[in-house]
Image (tube, rainbow, N blue to C red; front, side, top):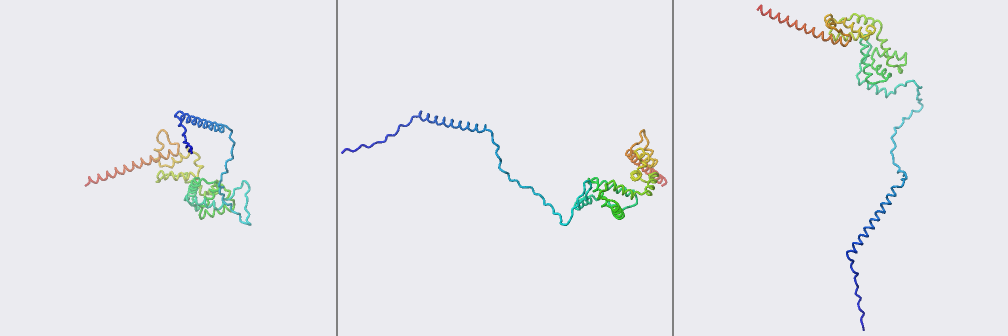
Length: 289
C-alpha cells in the first residue's frame, strides 16, 4: 500500500525593495490626486453665487412699558385749547418748590422802603435765573417767597387777574407798582440828588449811591452823568485826587477804584500826622521833667 505524499505549503516569494518603494509611491500619488480633486470641488463651491439664507429668528425681550394710570370714573379730564398754557401738575410744583427751598431764597414781607424791596427783587432774580426756570415758574417761586403783608397783596393780584399766565416782567411791574409808590420815590430822588459821602467810607457811599440810582434811573441816564453825580457825592479831599491828572475818570468802575486809593493815602497821612503829634508831645513832656 502506497501512502500519499504530504503537500508542503510553499510561501510566496517576498517582494523586493524596489517593488515596495514603487507601491508606496503609487499610493502617495493617488492620495495627492484625491486631495487635489477635493480642493477643486471646494473652489467651485466657493465661486457659486451665495443664496441669502434666512437667519434664525432671534428672541428679543420686549421693552418694559410703564402702566398707564387709569382715569378715575366719572371724572372729566379737561383738554386745554392750543396756545393756552396749562397749569403745572401738583407733583411738578412740589419738585419745583423743593428746588427753590434749597436755594435759600430770601423772603419778602412787604416793607415800604423801596430800597429793601429793590434789593429783594434783585436777589430773587439772581436765584431764578440760576435755576433756569420758565416765565410762569419764576412767578410761582417768587410768589412762594412772599410773607405777611406781601402775601395779602399777592392774593389781591390773584383775584383781579389770571396769574397762571403771568410773565415774569408782569410780576415785576405789579411788584414795583405796589412797593415803589410815588411819594416814597420822590423822597428817594431828593435824597439821591443831595447825597454826600460825609462820614461814610467810599464803599459805603458807593453802595448807597447804587441803591438810589436803581430807584431813580431817570437821574443817571448814562455813564457820564453817573460819574458826574458820584464825583459830586465824594468828599472834597477825595474828589480832588480822583479828578487830578491828565485823564479824569469816565467810567464808574475807574472812578470808584481811584476814590478807594485816594481814601487809603489820605488815611495814611492822617495816621502819620497823629503819630508825629503824639511823639512831639512825649518829647515835650520829657524836656519838662
